[in-house]
Length: 265
Image (tube, rainbow, N blue to C red; front, side, top):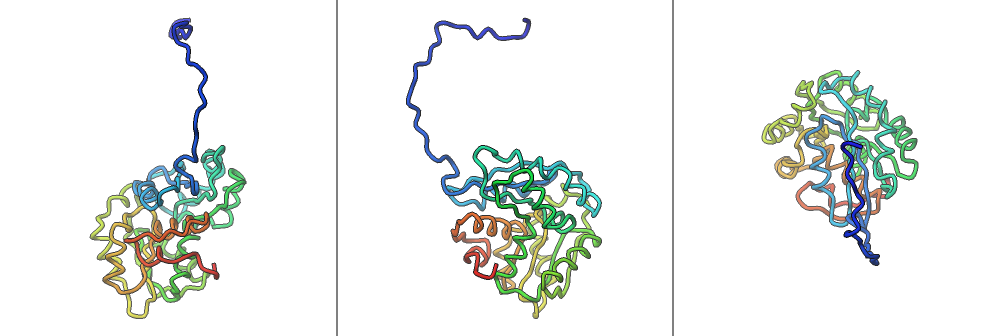
């Protein structure tokens, strides 16, 4: 038939060999992440924060450029399918939905139910679960929150954090409604914005959103503020690694990465 390659070639004959295998790039753990299709930042951050021997596997969830309550809620539709194609043979120890605001709007339990449906072998989690655990692990009660979001999302996040037991002294957003644009916010602006909302009574600063480049300046924010700084991607990676039994301390990304998972989580 036209277009088909003739594969019959008697001159090519590969002899049998005893192929040697090892545990691959994920000898210590394999982690799975469901990332928004419009996100410019998350995937690079995941690979950067994975220590040697930990293999990250990433799939993308179809998303629009618009970031609002309605578009975030719609992301649940493809969650189980996205989880199911994350290395189903190697089977990640943890599968995490890597969106802060989406985790809040949809709800942690509902997200985890859908991940279980697609990847029943994995421990399901969400980014905001990691953020909450990170805030608790550094002993934060009173917090200030910096986000790039619209205020309709900030209002939902404030209620969520209060329900988790935090005293939200202030939450401020940048009113950026475009997921792609979030990834282009200057790191110096993120740093200055986070520091500008700090208050003396705040135990920690939470810079919320997986789509902004906070980890590039996180250590600088923490050193300047003199208190713990939790960012979405830092806390998600710390939490997922600890769930998988990886206790490595990683320098340069805040004091959270010097801590184990803790008995209270």
